[in-house]
Image (cartoon, rainbow, N blue to C red; front, side):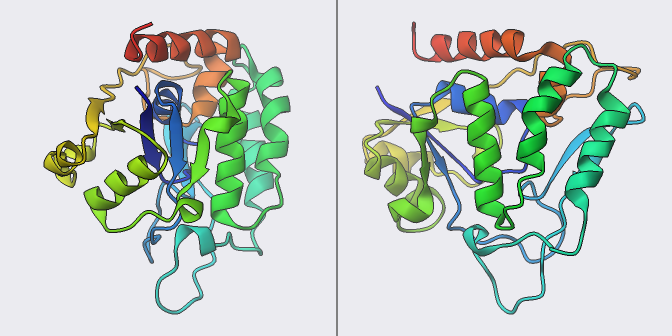
Length: 240
C-alpha cells in the first residue's frame, strides 16, 4: 500500500503536519492553489510560546498585486526584518528549554534563508526538518510539477493517482469539503490521520499549549525523542 498525503507548504508547521509526513509514503506540497488575498494563513504564520502564551509569529507577505496568485508565485515582503525578529524571539522565549542550543543551531540557517518565494522557503524548511527527524526527502513532490486537475476532492484524487498512490491520508479538518465517494470511485482507500497531540513539558506555561510550531516540540523534547514518537506512529499506520 502506498499512502499519499497532500498539504500546502506551511510556515514551520505544527507537530501534526510532521506526523502526516511520517505516516505517508509520498507527501505532496500543494503549491499551485491560490493563497487567500487578505489575512494571515498557515503559509506565513504559526504560533509559538511568547511570555508563556501561544502567540503568532508572522512573516509578512507582499500583497501589492492584482487578481489572485498561487502559493508558488507569492513572495515575502522584502522590507521587513522578520527573520531576525524570529531568531530573537526564540532566544528570548526558548533559551531555557532542554534542547535549545542544538535545535537553534539547526534552525537558524532555515529561518535566515534569504529565499523570498513563500513556497520554496517553506518547502525547504519542511523538507529539512523532516530529514532532521529521520524521514527521507525523496518522498516530497510539488503539485505544480505534477499537474493535478480539478478542484477539491477531484484534485486530491487526481494527484494521488498520478504519483501511484492507492490510499489517501486525511487530516482532522477534511470532513467539511472532502467527498469520500470520489476516492472510493477511483479505487483509492482513505486513511484518517486521527492525530493525538502528545503532552510534553513546556517552559513557563500554566497549562500545556497544543498546536504550536514543530519548533516548540523540538526544543522541548529533542530530536531523538520526537523522532522515535513519530516513527512509532508511522509504523503503526503501516502495520509494522
